[in-house]
Length: 298
Figure 1 (cartoon, rainbow, N blue to C red):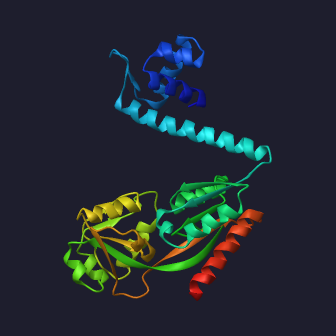
Figure 2: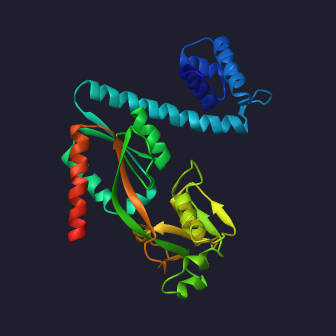
Figure 3: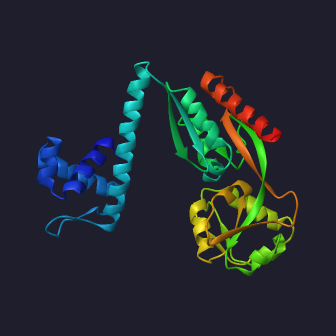
């Protein structure tokens, strides 16, 4: 699959007309049609319903169009940032994160770091811990914040803190009458796990808390996002475990309760490339460590 084919398909899908798309691209219609046909052959599915008038996208075509628009938009951002960095006007730093870190101290540190380093072009990417490890090794990000230490000789994992786990339950659940909830009690509830993929993930940390105690879990729902997991809890679909800072995500239809068991925690881990001596990474790391000291003292 070539970038040119994505651009050609975006033009056809947005106009639903080969002639207008060819005019926009400044090419003849026959080669445009051939490129779209080759793209469909490579994907193994039709993207366009050519029997309809006007032209229509198939279901697969609609999905591929949405993804193509996102890819092309991201490429434009990369091109602009690369030009700025190449011109020497800015430097670039990529940061990956899991959503649960957004309710603790890190967003304030990031805001301060951004303000104090206005010549640094900072890119934020929501990624699971596994995806962060891949992005770090590929150079797509410089720092990752997750809940899982991915063991790789090319990566350095720094545990910033251990957060206690709490239970998120529907606000109308009988569980809200408990001051603290035993983990064994939750084994009988529908358990919402996240992220569903890629694994291993925070979901496996949660499952391990049950398995090491010999508790057999009943029904589970798996979703790829914290917000979706909380939404399912709010809808009465089950309960979920979250780091305690997530309690700042307040909803009238969700209540949070501590666990009876002590020591059930989830680590907050910063991951960088082994041997990375970049000045901006070192500055960011020092700022985070200072914030942790300040938090402990308060």
